[in-house]
Amino acid sequence: MRTIAISGSGSGIGAALRVRLESDGARVIGVDLKGAEIEADLSSADGRTRACAAVLSQTDGILDGVVACAGLGPHLEDAPAIAAVNYFGAVAWLSGLRAALSRGTAPAAVAVSSNSITISPGADGPLMKACLADDETLARGLARDGINAYAGAKLALARWVRREAVSAAWAGAGIRLNAVAPGVTKTPMIEAGLASKTLGDAIRLLPVPLSDAAQPQQIAAAIAFLLGADASFCCGSVLFVDGGSDALLCPARP
Image: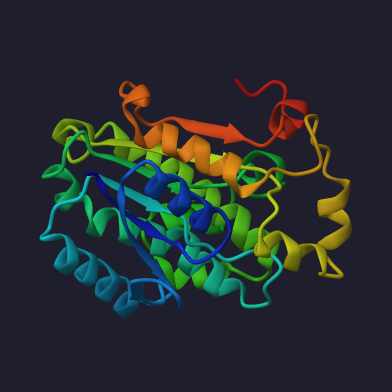
């Protein structure tokens, strides 16, 4: 039986992934603000430390998979918290459990990024750079609105995955690290965004060649693939699962 830890397991993509993995026979350790085995707030350094410590305690320090799914949406007014959770919380979660993965069987980790990393103007800006420089104080200070904070943090997360996946600590230890970049997905986060006066119309107008939005189960299937044996040669990949929005809007991006 594989043991997999998921942050953000209480709703949306994380909840769908939990159902998928458990139906395949895995043991899942979930972390969320409420309704999970471990209740923790990844917006703070203390919350991140406690979350990782609790997972290690419940698994005897051995994991086969880790997924960083917890995230805050761009509709929130607390932009600094978006940067804190979506980048620093995700990186602390993955890094804090890396050693446990090194003791697991065919270990793999997946970070949930977003297709906003290519389609949001300004994502590749000062906030993204502050995240990659591991300067949380500066990143929080640069997070002046939800859209900027969300896209910048998610781009930084994808680039962190690309950078770290090939390192001695990850690939060198036999741990596969990859990311998914979902598009519009029918989750509570998107529902809140649709209700937003500033974001609702933008979400509705985003072209999705295959349909209007993904189901959480479709994103969960992509994550399960990256965790599994069929993706055994994937390392540092960012898999777009967005119904073609990135390909339509950014056709020159290979």
